[in-house]
Image (cartoon, rainbow, N blue to C red; front, side, top):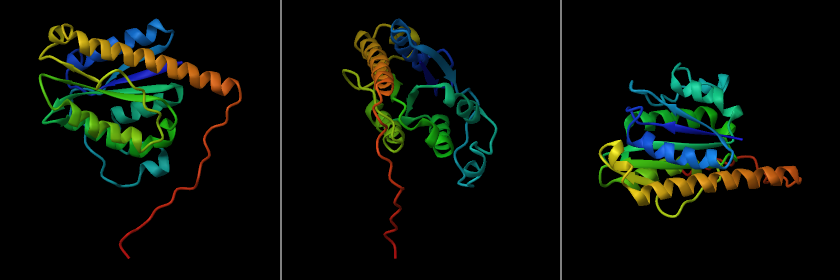
Length: 206
């Protein structure tokens, strides 16, 4: 089993990365393979609603979004991490998630997932709320922890002093590993997938 941890910070080895590393250690401790993927320091544009991904299964823009789409068939769980910019994920992470979920939602359904945020002081809960909506809309089982999935600090050294934040990250990793193992046991014992209905689209403007 494998979990892909996506680092949405422009700083490859910054505070968000430090938080994801703590989750990663807990996953590896429980026998789960991991990979931390950095979306990069170049700006990632948002979705332009062209519909091209519906024909090819990939975004028309060849960047890190398509790199992650290619990894999804080998991934059993996902964790998305972002720094807080004005009480929201940074613009590149929002653009990345918009395009990833629009182009590859079907490849992520029923894969356990979580989000984590990093901030100097505040804005974390609003940032978490924005990112959680992607999971809620995509049939992804959400992995819990013991508090909001956040760490605090201006630099990685500060994050390593955030004992509560690090415990939250470790617990998230333990819970992700447990959920993946439970899902595997269910599949092996023949538990069927949830019933799927054809999607209903209601237009309230007549």
